[in-house]
Structure formats: structure tokens, C-alpha cells
Length: 536
Ligand SMILES: O=P(O)(O)OC[C@H]1O[C@H](O)[C@H](O)[C@@H](O)[C@@H]1O
Image 1 (cartoon, rainbow, N blue to C red):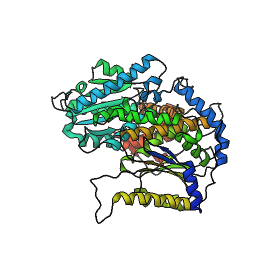
Image 2: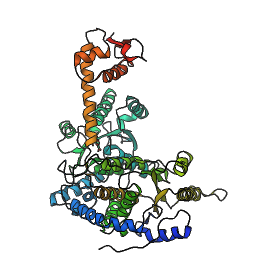
Image 3: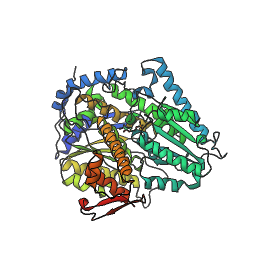
Image 4: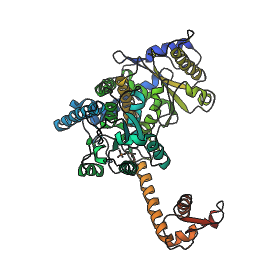
């Protein structure tokens, strides 16, 4: 049964009406000290009524998912990230025990490394971590480190989240000799993603050139028996941690993927999990009005006409949360950006996410938000507790300015008829980060149900991967052909190979000739058809 709720429609000009909406729509969790306010989204009482039955369905689907249904039908997988913070919810005892055991192992390993009980092969204490992972295996850890690490706490973190040679060179350059006391963690659920594999090989070679012993400082986080796991086992790496088949990369932050970095910076992993579990409790409530994830999903739905017509601009007013929008990009866009719905209809669903942090962004793109194209809604995130060692100077408290800037932008957007929702946290710590992540995870899950898509697969990514593999294969064939030293145009190469396209061959040759790989080109680079390529 839906409890009918009456509150006035959004009004850009009537502050009293808005105050009433604020009071009527405000969600608050006393123990977590978190508020959610959707009163400045253009959602009205009749939307609640209209969406009620859809939410009843969505709540049921989420319940089934938590009980272990095959929620990811295309991949025939269960979706179990909620079990990670409440193992007792998992469908069988073996899984429950496995989750609990992994958390213990991560905690012990982390504290032993931080306290120097586990040492680098050269006998010295580990000083740094090189974290090699991409997508969910990189973004969650990055968020954990940026959001939770305090100065001088735990190990220094460095990331390989790409195969950009320049990026890798800079990271290795920054590490320098410290590579010999660096824990190198390779993270890949599938254990077969090319990016972390290449990163691992680079790190390994650099380390071995320095006389280091790879297996004494290498750690793997992956699924049992994956390619990466087999390598780690064969070579007796220092440690390996499990990723579970039923946890997707973008929701893996409460698995070893997020817990291990937390443990390595001496942060309380149990608090992080407890915060997520508490928010899970709150977002499990099958009532639209009192469930914050449902309120958020409903507001997103109405703002974008259920078709993702408005982007979500994430504006955390806390530097620690600067990468949260990047984290949400994967969580939201990889989950909701789908061509087909679950009945096979072409729907091109999605919800675009971008943002950095306030107040910084007020001096960059907020001008367009206030006055330009109205194709977004803002998500303000604030933390109320200021930091004591940044005192007021001349009676100017930086925290007051931060709050003032947030309120100012929020008001300016509303006056301009632009929508926003706000999440306020009394303080920020591992528990609140866990809660924040869980809030968005559930909102994404509910929204996926509202628009009837599979939020847990990523077929588009797979096709990009296949296309990239085809290009690398084409390159091998082009290089084999040009090994004879004969010069050829892109068209001639294409004719002989009979694969790919002239344009793809041009791109490959442009890259090869830009590097000292022995290839030369004669002709005009502005007229691709004039060029003849050869191995010089
Ligand atoms: O952890 P891995 O198996 O290496 O996957 C890393 C990432 O790559 C994929 O392409 C997926 O789209 C992401 O969801 C995943 O997080």
C-alpha cells in the first residue's frame, strides 16, 4: 500500500513553499548523521503516486537479487555485493565463511605489512604500493586512498590504471629506488584484462633489473583459477586474495579490491563495511518515501523523463571526494548505459555523470549550469565537520566559506529553475564513505529496475575490447608484410592483407612511424593516400 503524501510542487520563486518541500521530503539517518534532500528536484506528489507500483516491483527484484537470484541473466550470474558487508545474507554457508575469512586475511596481511612484520625481499619495511588495475579494479582503490588516507598514515600509493607508456614511466620514475620496497598489487577480477597484465610486466621487469625478487613483493587480487591466479600460484607470490564471481568490478569496493588498500593505509576496514551495511539496511526498506536510494532513483527518473535526458553533475564540497564522480561514472554509466532492455527492446538507456568538486568547479563550469543548457541536475555532497587544525584567521573560517559557496550555488541553480539534490554528512570517515557508496549502489540497482535493464553486465565494453584486439592483430599482419622492405600505400597494404580498413592501417602506420620502430613514410602527411610506408 502506498501511503499518500502531500507536498507542494517545486517553486523556483517561493521560499516558503520550498521550505515546506524541504521538510516534507527530507530523509535523515540519525546514527549515520546523513541527510538526503531531493526537494530541489522537480519531482512532485503525483510522480510519487505514479511511480509507486514500479517501485513495488523494483523492491521485490532487489530482494530477490539479495537472496541470490540470477540477477545478471546474460552472464548467468548472481549479484552479491550486498553480502560482502553482511555475509549472513549470502545464500549458503560456504559463501558466508569465505567472505568472513577473506576479510580476516586482508586485515591481518594489511596490518602486518604496515607494522613491518611482513618485509620486502631486501629485509626492509615496505614503504609504497604500486596498484595495478583498471575500471572497478582501479577506481574503487583510488577512491579509498584519496578519500581516506591521512598524511603519514600507512604506505604511499601509486597507480597503474592504464597502458599509457608515459604514465607508467612517470609512476616508475617517481618510485625510483623505492620500487625495491614496494608492494606490487595486480588486480583483475577476470585475471585476463590486457591493461593490468601489461602494467604488471613493466613493473616486474623494472624490479628485476634492479635485482629485486618479484615473487617476494607481488600480490594478486583475482578470481580463483584465473590466468593471473595461476601465475601467482605457480610463482608463489607473496599473497593472493579472492575476488568473487558474483561481484562485478564496479561494485567491488567492499571486496578485497577496496579493503586491501584501506588496510594498507591503516584504515578501519570494519567501519567501512559497517557503514555500507547500515546504509543497506536503510535502502532495503520497501517504501519510496522513507528509502533514500529510492528517493534518489525516483528523482533521477523524473528529471530525465526515465530516459536519462539530464546528466548528473556531482559536486562534493570536500577535496577528499574529488574522485567520487569518476568512481560514480563507472558505477552509474556502466550499469545504466544499455542499448537493450531486458525484453530485448532497443532503449539506449543511461545517465551521464561528471563533476569534480566544489567550490573549485564554481570557478570553471558552474556558469553554464546556472545560465546555459538545462540538461543536468546537480548532486551536492557536503561534510559538516570542519578540520580543527585549519583555524579561523581574522575570524574567517574556511569551512564557513565552503558552506556559503555550496548554499549560494544551490540557491542560484534553483532560482534559475535548475535541479539539484543534496547529501549532507555530519562527518566524513570510513563508515560514511561505506554508507555513501552503498547509497549510490542501491539507487543504481533500483533505477535499473525502473527502466527494466540489466544493470550488471557490460556488453558494450566487450565489443570495444574485441575491436581493440582486432587492431592489434591487424598491426601484426601489417608488420609481417612490411618486413620485406617494400614500400606500400595504406591501400596496397589493405589489398594484400584483406582485413581491417585503409584508415585503420593509416592509424597504425602513423603511430609506428612516430616511434623508433624502423618504419618510414614518404609523402604528404596531410594527404594520407599519398603516403608510402616501408621498413627502413
Ligand atoms: O578486474 P578486471 O577483470 O580486470 O576488469 C576491469 C574492468 O574492465 C572491464 O572492461 C569492465 O568493463 C569493468 O567493469 C571492469 O571493472
